[in-house]
Image (spheres, rainbow, N blue to C red):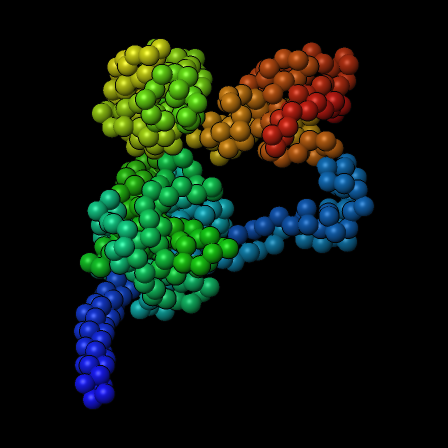
Length: 459
């Protein structure tokens, strides 16, 4: 009995000693890291104007959304149509003269952006240098004197699942909250993200307000920018990898925008049956569904049905990987692609074009204004990634971005008008012009996986 007691006491003492040693090794290291990195993490607060007219309309109006008489209820009792909305986020300083990295969604549509530092009661008004919606990154600048505390980027590709990381930010407005955890996984794709980002997954606690803050390795280097969570889960957060972020931030600083390479193709994954039908030995590569006439891929001789296997010698495991790789090249770059066509591999060189940003960022042109007047809705050409998200095989049709008429909804895709395919605003305008004598146009639309027709009176 005595011997057993001695054994258990010895085990207990060894465990206690190990725990104490582990605590002394990790605890002070995290606290030292947080103390050193914390001053460079900032609070980003914004003021945005939100249109509440639709909420008021739904509350007061007996008519369905899009009904012409709803215009009266928009003004009901003279209630305000817009209100101010305040939100909080995080960011971190990357240069002594005041450049700050945060998320695009933190500052999008903000009328006023204020930045506060940890060790200062002063607030700075921030200027947006540039944002990139595709990777959810933004670069801000504050007018501050030099010697600001800064954080440096580390390499996200060197991080491995299981390595310790620390997040610093302002969750729910709780300034400079420090949380720790590990890298849970790499190369994650989440539904709301654009086609160019593979996320780091971490179980370091991330909450609303952490967005834009740094995810640090144990050397205090930024290896990720915290950007998203899974609301239904715990310990599931996502950060933009630093290797990708550095490229985006440097372009925003130089050009105020991100200039990406462009092939001009629609692509999809290669599944088991497709690989078998094409004679491929494995389910890898990006299957070309369509090629846009006159774009770089078309000029290089790429055809629908080709499978792109490699770019500059790097294997393409899935279609998303191709989008990410091409997006990292600058317009004008020459890339060597290996393709599979009719049972043989071929090598082609493609000079990349420049991916055009969404036309929604531009002011509506005359055609958009005229069509909005004639049809009661705002249209624009469908983008490649939107077509893929909607389940369309081809990037074809016009996307409805706003509608004031019954039967048409935001997010509908108009494929044809009076039996004529409409892939441009000019084609739609031409078709509407021909239908003026009838006073109505028959639209073939795609909505949530369904194809249907809608007769639309011309206004």
